Length: 276
Image (tube, rainbow, N blue to C red; front, top):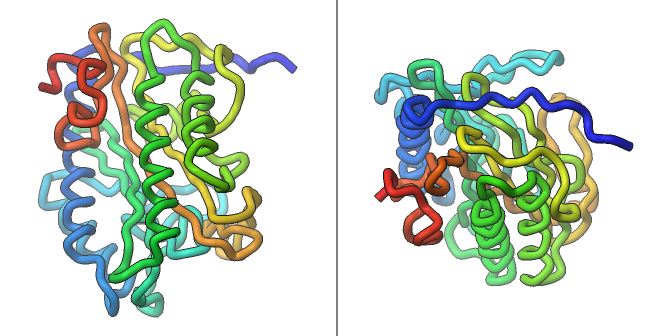
């Protein structure tokens, strides 16, 4: 089967700079989530904190009111706990417990440009094997980012993520879900799977902005969508981890738009000079 034609938005350097501002709002939310995540806190409370941070920065939550056709999403974050992989809706009833994992996905719009990123956080004391899974997901994310180079191909990213996960242990790589283009909309072409052979798909060009987001599990790679038409869970009940960054591809390197340091600590010389 051939590849469908992608409609990919190419940004100017100035527009990538505007996306960086949105990305820093997302980074500020993540910092607030790290401080607030602890046993006894409801996911709704985390959502309230996140929305406050976004609006205090003059931005708008990307997720709130987002509609895929089955109804508008009712919150500013996705708060996926334990076996929930992605898109779980925050509630007052869902209270974090010692030993949980929570994946917090958040997007922000600033001056018409989107930033989008996710982190997985431990709640109190968490089993080492679960912390190892989170580390594996984070390492795979950075491997994927490092593979995103002008002149390469889209699936170079996919293959780098898969290779890093496989090297880390016996984890499931969630099927079907993945990253995406981003810019004037939150979800744009191209779709980026977290597995596959390298050297395929669209050619990566300066001015592309991509959200790269590994999702892995302690067990099965298969998932089920719940009746709320949003929450995705592992089909075997195993815990999951989800991490994500938005990046901009520039002529002189990659810029991790949602990382406070632009990606310098993890990528070094691969990072564009404007991030330094």
